Image 1 (tube, rainbow, N blue to C red):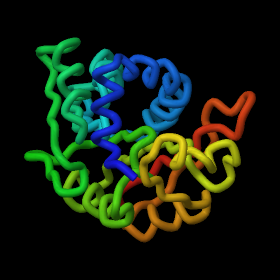
Image 2: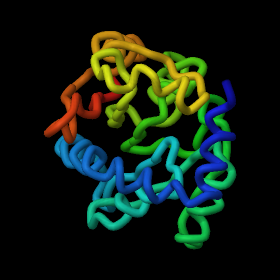
Image 3: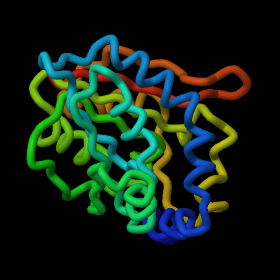
Image 4: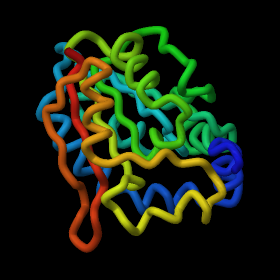
Length: 205
């Protein structure tokens, strides 16, 4: 099994990052729409981090909102960050290991799509977001397509050649709560003709 960051850098080099954007747009849009009902922000708007930002499309989606004061992206794949900076040279995109990185300033909102099951220590990462990334009362919203109840995903690790942690919906919820979050929404996004993206929106308690 190869590191996910290595595989995704290759995908970015081949232009596959744009396909990831189009494939996840419906789920991400729905998750963000739900999350915005709960985000607390200052008069100037909310601040955000997209964890596993790829080519930065979610960062740009957030920044386009009138109520967004700032949004930055972080990704472990060098070519993804390079593509993000090519498209958006004025944006803030950071290439770093998600599990060890800490932002200089806490934010109101953290988003992540199709990233967490690649990590070595999911509970540890969730705890870092809770204690080091988010303001008190801040919001985490994330989606995963690789989970136990989605039978179509069970062979993905072998097909892609990357380790992917397999957890059930209840196990994902338990990890989020154990990290110190209160789940405010748990649903399946963009589920019209498949199991849907497992989406969790949670507040740092």
